[in-house]
Image (tube, rainbow, N blue to C red; front, side):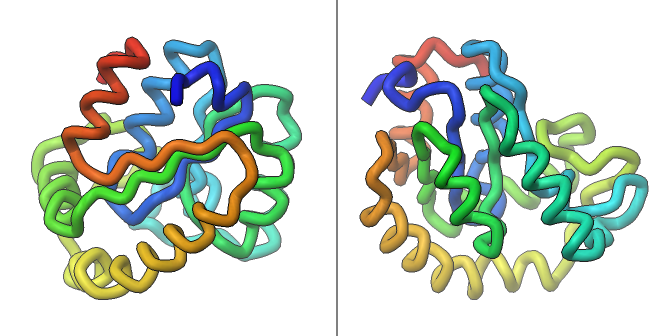
Amino acid sequence: MILDELGSRICIMGPSNSGKSTLAVAIGRTRGLPSIHLDQLHHRPNTDWEPRPDEEFRALHDAAILGPRWVIDGNYARCLPQRLERATGVILLDVPTATSLLRYLRRSWFERDRPGALEGGRDSVKWNMIRHIVIAASANRKQYAALFDCIGLPKLRLDTPSALARFYLTAGLDR
């Protein structure tokens, strides 16, 4: 699968800290697509990841997907049907749990200006996030995989760090 086959409205899904936002920015920069980070729409800026009211998030989400061209990263299953209805392609990042955990620790300790960061927020290590990555993400991975198999759009599954690195290289993406 080459990047062009995914079209001009690309959904990137996957577990927390799998590299969705970084990939969205890279694709957006290369293809001239606006990058939309669902975490930024779901959380209030200048907070410690405080969620917006659901109706406010849904309104922001629905407005974002009306655009003619975008690459959007995040899951938020409650809004996924309308997102997939507008999408032209899907990428599923399914990297191992250990990779997600290491990425979370690295971004919390060392990366201040990372793609998808919350405006005015600061990442820090939180036990509930570690628990989410290690425990909840396993169940979510199975759901993402089952959903991914049913999607009729052009799609690409990247399930190892090396597969993701190869995709960056073959698609001409910069990290």
